Image (cartoon, rainbow, N blue to C red):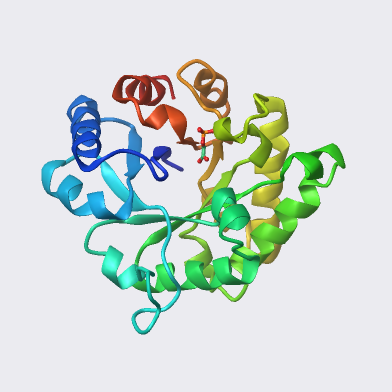
Length: 250
Ligand code: PGA
C-alpha cells in the first residue's frame, strides 16, 4: 500500500532563526504514529541545524547537482546532501523557468540522486499557455518519460512524482486553483506512462502527489482521492499552524 506524504517546500525563504523555529514547531506537533510522512525542504544552509534539533520530520533538499564532486562552483552534490536528507526535489518549475533547467539535466540529477540513495521528488506539469492550448498531456508525457529515461525498474520504483501545474502555484500570480477534476487525469496519466515504460506493479506502487496553492481547506478535496498520495506545499508550509492543519486534513 502506498503511504501518504505531505511535503513542505520552503523555497528561498526564512532566516536561520525562523527556519529552526518553524521546523521545531512542526516537529513537536507531528504525532508519533502519524500515518502521514511529513517532509520539509529548507534552504541548504539550514539543513544541518534542523537535522540536529528535530526527530520526527524528514528532511529534503530543493535541488542537487548531477556530479559527485569537482570543479562545479556553487553546486551541491547528492553525496554531500545524503548526510542530512533522504529526499530531494528535482525538476521544480521554478528551476525549469528561472534556472533554465532542461529535461536532460533533470534526468541526470535524478540518476545521481538515486545513485546516492536519495529519493527524488520529481515535479512535472504544464504552464498557463500550455494548459490554454490543451497541451498538458504532451508536457507531462515529455517530462515523465525523460525523468524515467535510462533507469532500471528498481530505480524507477523509488521516484515520487508530483503533478504541479505551474499556473496553480500561489506565487505565479494567476490566483487560479487546480481542482481535483483537473489534477486526477494528470495523476492517472503519470501512472499510465510508468506502466507503459515499466510494469503495472511499479505504476501502482509509485506515490504521486499534487502541488499548487494547497491550503488547509482545499487539501481535504485532494485527500478524498485514493489516487492522490499527498501534497507538495509551498507558501502554506512557511506557517507551522497552516502546515500542521494541512497534515491533519490530508
Ligand atoms: P504553493 O507552491 O503551494 O505556494 O503554490 C507549491 C510549489 O511551488 O511547490
